[in-house]
Length: 141
Image (cartoon, rainbow, N blue to C red; front, side):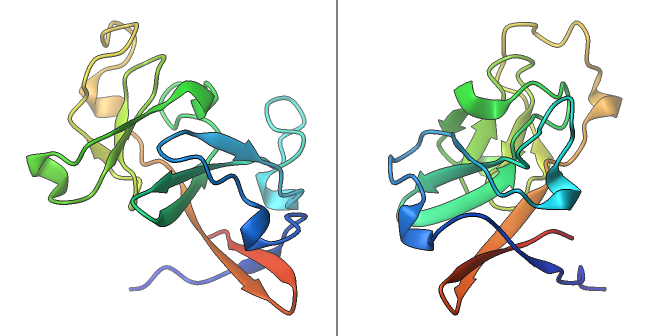
């Protein structure tokens, strides 16, 4: 069964206004109620990465340790992800497929897995972005 779409209007002015740096995680505020958490994400921020002319949008915090992914590293594709880039949390080392958010083999990280066992691997929430009528929408499943 396909995940259902749930397109919600954001406070992002336009797709063109998104950060354009390559291979760097940037946070963008959306003000989308379902993404807002008063303690950890008061502006409903999401992470944006540009990799090889594609823009990826995903959770602002690591699914494993909840630390913001602002220092996350974009890694080259591995055999496991075929030709899809990976994203690694700078703090706990959790590594995800950049497009699907699926957890993949860890590459390391500051904690080297002392706190996180393989069984705790969670998927990183990934979101679609679209523009219509001069407004930017996000698909929040």
